[in-house]
Length: 379
Image (tube, rainbow, N blue to C red):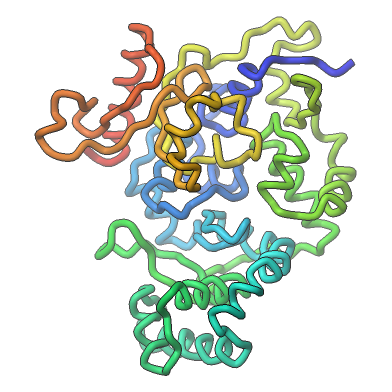
């Protein structure tokens, strides 16, 4: 009989599965281990993505995470939903082999509106590769746009962005080493030159691999969650899941089936399921766009409906950084700016806006989370 659990339990199990709350005495994972475990984590806000990795890798600093990009172990591209994600370098190609075609189809109308043709793409590809040869193998977004413009390929009105999107989607370019002259960005490099040991999977191997790794790292999650996250067809999802379902467990919450890793299910306490999942007293500072919210289409286990407009103002897709208490979003936060905010900031760097009253112990935990973030930044 499938065990039935509460939404609060779903939320805290996700904290464990995603590595946000450690559940064992094993050595802390390094930045690459974190990303490889999650398979892909949303990364359009690069500083936020660095903290998403750092908070799951206790003891790691921002410099440690950046070093993994500089060594070519981590990269950033658009393998899912047409949005920037961080992946382990070796995983990018096989994920794109599953997802690129549907993303291209989804953007076809927009590319016609922008007047992007096959010859245009061929020209900017040649320009990009030629520029890389002259630029020590790395080039900025601005440098690429300047080269495109000089050759008569306009970059305004997002045309330049879509050129880069297409070059990344086809595997020509990838964002690799950190641009120290721009603390929030990376250089573009040649995927073929930068990614040293890409994994190559046939489609019938890649589908179960992606399904298994998603549910292991994000579960408890539903098939609908995975469909939203991957944008694969339901046919492909069912084909992949059928091959790995014996390596997963299921739970039920409010009549819906959730899939998860056996190790995550064990946190419920074995056959009698009487153990309370850790995390009820935890307080965490998560960046905007973190997988804890963005990894699912149904975010209700962690985000109350009345707090959604405060977390995603105007429902515009721009997620604020969140204060998560006991697995639930209880506020937002941002980096403190200037002396005027000194009275309200925590550890000199964090300015929280709390939706719900925190207990005294939770307030102390919030201070500890702020110190952890300050240490990550090297403050």
